[in-house]
Length: 411
Image 1: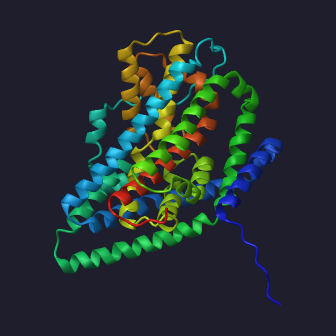
Image 2 (image 1 turned 180 degrees about the vertical axis):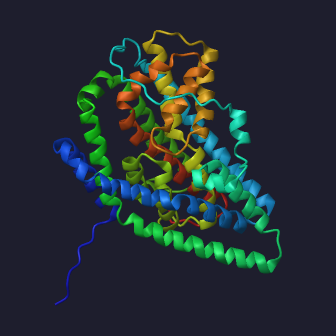
């Protein structure tokens, strides 16, 4: 008699784990201490492969692009898409927060203490200079993504300029290394449901232990919460699908369905970098995007393409100004928009990095940094939603650019 094997798709496993983890954290708060290790090990596993994945994938991707003309064209398209999508996201948030005015009459007494939030002292120009690493090994150890990406692009470009024999040998080595890293990635991805269960339970338990009754917090900051969420939903369910349809001439519904696993992973981990291995695997295997395009656009996107974060920063800063009764001039409002754009590019793909970048935007228009305390109570919840938009935008960009390069995709 033949055995019947029941298999459940990974995204359904993750969804079940997400709900189960939430319930576990809410009703069995004290016992989450015994399950936290699973989320910690899962995130450490993903973080373990991020640097070698970015390094090998970008070098091989750039080397396979070939000529400087092709690389320049691909780079311009990628940066053009990232700037356009981020600017649209910021303007969406700006229009909503200016129309709804969630900060007017907000309860200033309801404030969470702000700790370890300092304004980045580096100017935008200094940030650009620091993209060039003084010591690549130091950048690799400390995970300075922009420096690693810069080195990988330069290495990949000049790899095509050396003699054929060493070039083939190096390319074979790097392609083999990338294959091994992707095998490790697939192995780690199998444990995503356990990691998601643990992380979700921990987040919910932490909110309860801090005395934040989630329903009370959301009700007090309800209008602000709804404004940010509405902006993210408009961008994720309307703007990005339209860009996929119009610019990429692809099926946005099929693409969204194919990205279920990266979306749920992004929601639970709140980290673009941690989701990167999952996104690359899904974009290549589900959508049929070539490794050449995926390995160039997605690591770059995980570092500098922060649609959700930029929208959130714009809404939060305008909300803080409204709550303090500070009327921003048109010029100051434009500063908010463009500083949010630059801050999003410099924002690291790690949880809570948006708070540090928000401090930069607040300082740019002379608003009190204490205002961050007003929005901190719901920041961790909104962080999950905005990371989804960050990651989903990256995958949309990969599809649009692949289509513009004449690739035949399954979407």
